[in-house]
Image (cartoon, rainbow, N blue to C red; front, top):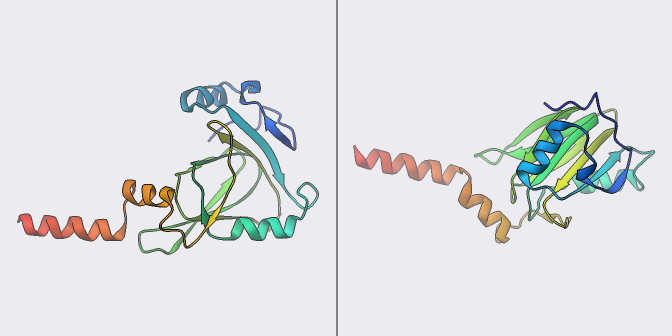
Length: 166
């Protein structure tokens, strides 16, 4: 949990220079992870043009070709990700939360019933915000994710190998 209470951030700033951070914990994160670009957005009907269509797009299952980092400055919402059986896991995010999704993970986002989330998005280098909607299993980022992270198939194979060793 980060301290989103003690520091002020604009409602919207595209871009926002992470060097402008005054929060020592955010500065440390920025330096440790090499974040060189950030922006701040507010997902709310009053602050995001074409709110309903944008929310529909965020809720379409997709991947990105870079990790996705969100520091929640206010409001709340949900990220959904898939488990080993390919069923949804819902993760609530709220003020002060820092969420990192690995490159290539299938996910989607939605606001809660308050329709407000104020978030900082952090990037290494120049951001490229292209969602690749499912199915995209042949995308290099998806292949990288499948190679690096557990899957039901890998779990079954490991159990079989362990069984054969006995």
